[in-house]
Image 1 (cartoon, one colour):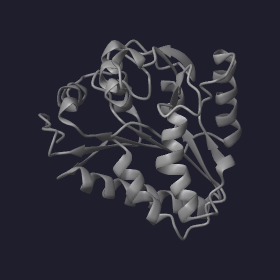
Image 2 (tube, rainbow, N blue to C red):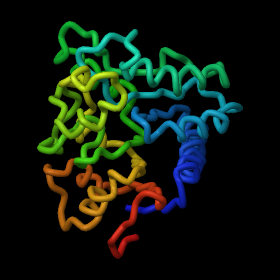
Image 3 (cartoon, rainbow, N blue to C red):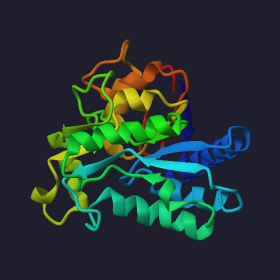
Image 4 (spheres, rainbow, N blue to C red):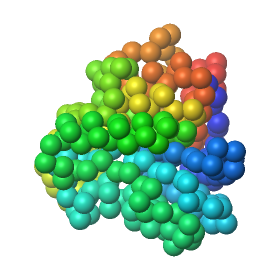
Length: 253
């Protein structure tokens, strides 16, 4: 585990973008393929802005981008869908900057699937056919969730349909006109899938995350009550901390 301290959000975004761009380029050169998993929400927006120019002159024909989750049910055309968010903030700008990136190499859970359980199974099969995950970027929820793996999630779970916790709905309500519009369920990559990645990068920004990140960093053992704590034993996880918002109280800081 490594902690990368950044003085502010912009520095965090640029540092992380530099690291991911370097890793993507290395994997495309050495393995001829890279599978990058990306989050939604406000935390990664600066990362995407900084990352796209760094990949402008790279052959991205074998870059595959996987989205962590999607609300269910949710139409792709909805402005609240993660499909639209990922497309608008990352996929379309990346393709515009570098046409070698292929839209058919982007994979987002289908919030319109008539059978969500079949969609989860098929999504796991897509990941298996890709050969697994190379890089996973995560945000951190105020209750310790990663993707939509809410408290109580188990380490052996793969892609599945979940109930969204009340605290998460409250946090996400800022993206909706009315609080009661926030969906109650979502399709999410499970903890087993996430921790199978070679490298994991966690963005920790926003004052609301101060309490939970301090809890995580001072745990003796992972606990299902805080799903992100399962990352503590991963062989290669990097916590990017925005020191403007976060004040770690641990010997690791």
